[in-house]
Amino acid sequence: MNIRTRFLMSLLIVAMCFAPAISVRASDPSNGDWPMWGGTPDRNMTSHMKGLPTSWDVKTGKNVKWVAELGSQTYGNPVVAEGLVFVGTNNESVKDPKIKGDKGVLMAFREADGAFLWQIASDKLQAGRVNDWPYQGVCSSPVVENGILYYVDNRSQVIAVNIRARDKEGKPVPEIVWKFDMMEELGNHPHNMSNSSPVIYGDLLYVSTSNGQDESHVNIPSPKAPAIIALNKKTGKLAWEDASPGEKILHGQWSTPTLGKVGDQMQVFHGQGDGWIRGYDALTGKKLWEFDCNPKDSVWQKTRNELISTPVYYEGLVYIANGQDPEHGEGVGHMYAIDPTKRGDITESGRVWHYDKIRRSISTASIVDGLVYMADFSGFLHCLDARTGKPYWVHDMLAAMWSSTLVVDGHIYLGDEDGDVVMLQAGKEKKLLFETNMGSSVYSTGVPANGVLYLATRNQLFALADGAQSKPVASKN
Image (cartoon, rainbow, N blue to C red; front, side, top):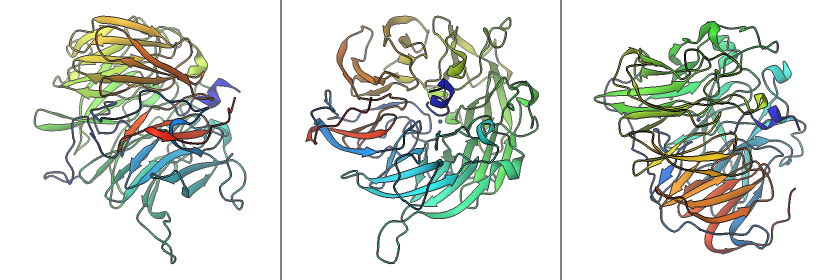
């Protein structure tokens, strides 16, 4: 299978001027749902949840609560809200015989037992792989708030769905509230796949557009199309947009927006396709600062990278690593801690630290107790000091990594392309506690919700819980 077909992916308004309808929490959904990529708007992959399993065996069913069949390729991370589990995939595991062929699919399962409830299927774009790579399915994670789910499908559409709707028999059904077609409304040209996990502040929904190159990998068909937009979550109307990368997009734009309160101002942070990360006033879209995540002498594609990783906001700093489409292979990477209180071009003034011993990365960091846990595509997990960037240890997974670390209750969970999942002890000393194989590649990140750990492989979704015992799971290799 072409490595590009495994990527896209994995692999995250007229605004209100008063207090937002929901608060932007610091990372820790605690013992409840996991309603978005990263759990909370700062995208820090952490939780203090107790009681998650510290070992399991998918072959014997030990600590496996249930297993659900997905499509043949799954890159969208699960989210859990209101008793439902949602995940993006393709149509290779046919749930409805009337829906045939290659589609992008958002599936909904019952949290209690994994029963399939409903799906939304989207046709592929006629342009084909330039905009909508075959069999990639839906690659972004949804966000759920007050009964409404928002996600980006394979057709570059932002879709709002009422997940509390019922049919005449009382069965749950998806009810489309509104759609915003980014290709039609913005002149957007997604490269290979649309991939963004929305985030919400007040009445605003923030989305990356995935605008990028055409098949020549030279031309930018829509340089004036925005890299990031804000929509009114109630109406789907455009509130603000920014197209800072312009004609300097290196390839595609697959990073996802993050929120953080800096002083008295809410900012949205976005890694973009020219290799710069930018910070915006969340309400107005005013660009506040920008930071070049590459050395000035870097050259695309050898040493200059774009940004695919999702920014993480932790204790006043923004953390991000750069990388490239895995089709480009391994290479030198860089990770930064950035001070978002600075203004303008803060490549020098805003740099708190720079770590250059990391390889290209498409993963997102977990930061707990002053330690950063960051994976790179070459298969190395790095543990760094969050304030200084000082490295404490590196763990070699011996396989490519598309997923990100998840840190829960002192344990680091991480999966790789070979299907191996490890659990290490969080802290300044490396200690491997558990390792197992899931039977298929792991491109997604673990999700903790209501005492259960959810892990998606390429074609199955596992709900793992202490004391559970399911029937043995047949290998999918």
